[in-house]
Length: 85
Image (tube, rainbow, N blue to C red; front, side, top):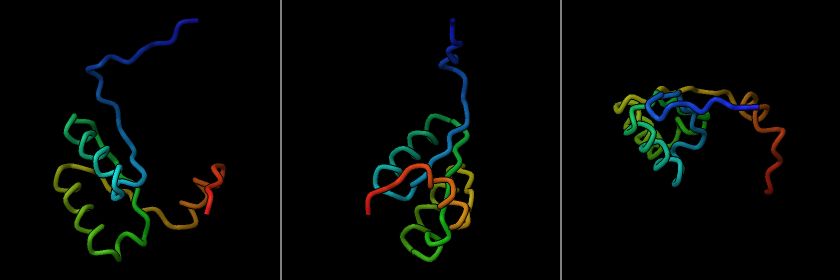
């Protein structure tokens, strides 16, 4: 069985969870700089944090598409992956 390998010139969409975090900022910058359509998933709590709001705005200015997700949906998306507290 042979799998098709996407061309290096194909610019697929990228969804980033945690774009305002330390590593997420670098990943988001790299995605935007590569010219890929970049979507960042944002929790409602990020909107109330001035430093995160500034980061989100900077990414929007560079072309990122912001997807606001409600907390119950966010929890549902991550529920298959238990995290240590």
